[in-house]
Length: 108
Image 1 (spheres, one colour):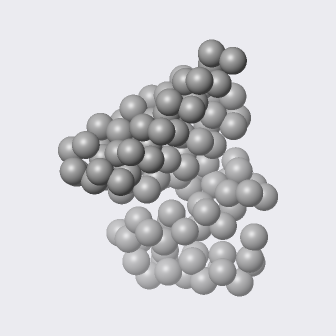
Image 2 (tube, rainbow, N blue to C red):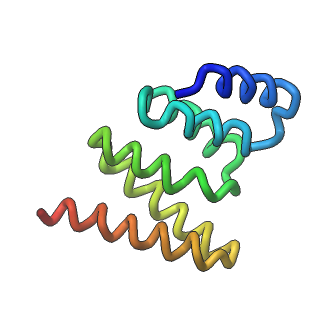
Image 3 (tube, rainbow, N blue to C red):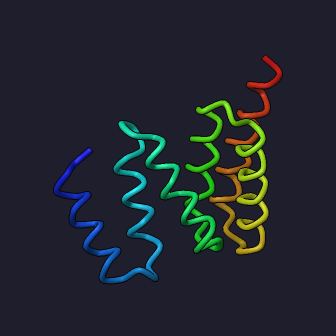
């Protein structure tokens, strides 16, 4: 986690609150060391920018890591449907693979 980068991203968010990438980048800064904070930013993105596809993979994965299986499953499914609607084959495949791996964890 890089404090300078976090401050810069917070500044960008203040200047351009409508740009989802800045919030996404901030969430990724927190991802490894403060996953709860990352999840807050990802949830904000899901609420305020539901068409921002990159959010779904990371939000679902964090929910799965926190053992919130129901939320993870719902977000994986929403992301897969959004990728299909946006005709984003790469994201569709990535989310589908992650969702299958998530389901396989339930079977183990």
